[in-house]
Image (tube, rainbow, N blue to C red; front, side, top):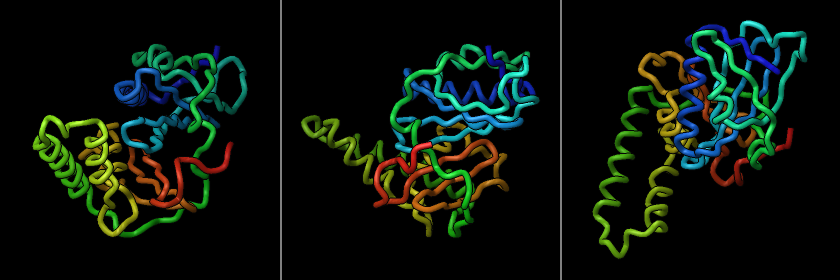
Length: 224
């Protein structure tokens, strides 16, 4: 049995909250875990946003009982959440599952460079609020016969595919960051936008949202 020893109760609570939010959008969600040393990265893909969410977790020690010093496995998000003990700040790694296609392709680990043009945090939150308001207004005005899934999806794609400020980052990436608990008022000084190849990553102190640039194809790069 592989036990993760998280840095403190707060790390455990944040991990549990992240997993809960992923499960809200996909009850059968899987996450890919990658750990080395005392750092754990938890990757998930909430289907509503078409982005890759990454939650960084601090560990006190890699593992107990002298197991491997690295970990790379795809597991059930629900089973992992059930194993989180916030008081003890531990989590048990569930058995591996056959991961969805996205779990086999992740953004590069290195080569990231800073990108200019990202608005201030307050402006980002206002942007998401305005987009949500617009979506509700436009869909609410639809005649009953036009209120189809296809039309709702078309309006959503139009709104959420717009870019943020002077960047190529789609609004849906910021919406995902806020919905997953990454875009908090206390993260005012820790936001940044970085790029590596075709990938963009909205970085916050609580996690990152990675997305492919428009026109660069589906979520996916080299398999690793």
